[in-house]
Length: 266
Ligand SMILES: Nc1ncnc2c1ncn2[C@@H]1O[C@H](COP(=O)(O)OP(=O)(O)OP(=O)(O)O)[C@@H](O)[C@H]1O
Image 1: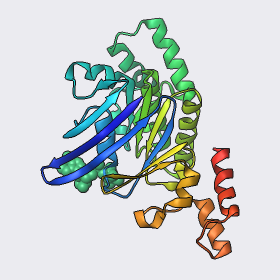
Image 2: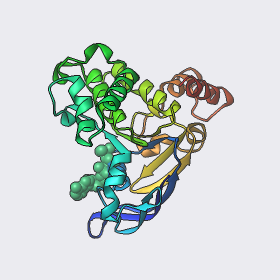
Image 3: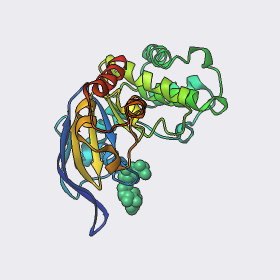
């Protein structure tokens, strides 16, 4: 359980970036954090992990306060990050070494390393690339290797920070389906994105606007109640398609049905 309790944050005094933010993410949830550029999404991710500390209020992970430096290692072990550019994370020369490296570092026994390698590589469907050089793979494949390296560490939460934004539609779809599968297996998934198409896979949306939490609920309610254009966000394809044919913006039962359908397929 990850909790923000009346969190305030600024980089420069007097220039508030996160304002009085409170929410709790339960174990096993799939949450999308959305909002326009610069609204504070990455700052929230860093606060979750204790990379940044609140100026006021508290961030706790399983009741451990991120401001207690002695417990930070425990938090880092259980919260994994996948970033926009996977190349920034690569440190070895083969896909296999990339997944094994972190495990050796924390002295996981040999047999357990093999189990975790198999599991993680299968989860991202990169079994045929174990000996490949990460830098020579496609964008989507690179991102899948980065995810495998995180999955192998068995974190409780994975935060995907704009992890699909540099990928082509096929790569994006592959990563999205891996996220869904990991979530089905019980992992907590936090997906920071401004691709509204992708938020349909999440169970819950947190909309951030100028450092404040403006909406917290499921995608259906979100598209019903939030005026997406006010937040410089695009409508998902299903919604735009519906509007194109019906020349209307208000929500109707059909419109909701399309979102519901797409949501349930995901
Ligand atoms: N290290 C920093 N020092 C000073 N200001 C910063 C720093 N990092 C971010 N900011 C500012 O804090 C605000 C929130 O930034 P943040 O990166 O959290 O937003 P974001 O929603 O993730 O943006 P994007 O979608 O563009 O990645 C922005 O105004 C940004 O310029």
